[in-house]
Length: 274
Image 1 (spheres, rainbow, N blue to C red):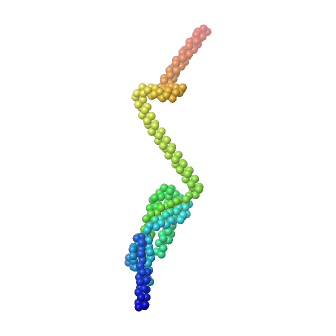
Image 2: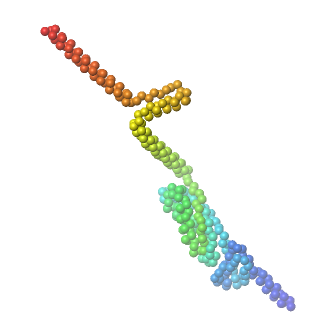
Image 3: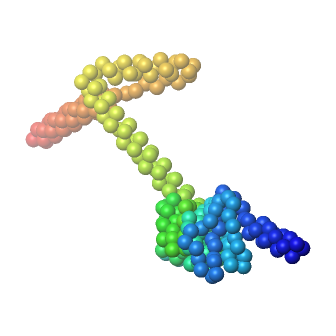
């Protein structure tokens, strides 16, 4: 009887130790006599008969890897430090255990090399302005290489781009020059629009000459509302041209009269000599 009880106790303890509980996000990859079972176990209650069976727990939750800062030389020969973060999860536990010894370390190393190679093919302006496109490209490359390991890369984000102090000053000058260029273009477009409106106004005033007088009276009202002591009186250019023509005609008549009087005086002097 003691031997039977001992055997029953050993069997009970073995059965209890064979009971494993896996969480909802866990799967158990079972090796029986060194051979991989066709399906991963879990979640819930499973039996692992040691030493015949060996179980490897694999989490199916989304995990993150922070890629340390990498020295990247862009296509336009600018050295920058870039770090990133990768979001991935295991979709096939059997492949994650069998195909790679440590899928976390392998994914991290692959992310570092991919980050350097991909960002080294773009220019600095593309790295700063087209970050979303680069993130998608990095995710596709990593997902393609990690798919045989049963790992699905869901997102890659370039976190920070560190530039040298000289490059930061150069970018600041470039941004300032760009703002000045835009300001000049906007000013020129405003001048062009204003000239078009002035041309239209001049055309209307040319058809209705009384409009310029009304505009002049309106200007006087605006000046008087500000209680100024100075009144601006516009002088039409046509009046100046007419006055200049009149002065030229008067001057020409005076010159003709002087020439005639000179001729008469010379004729009288010659007659007196005779």
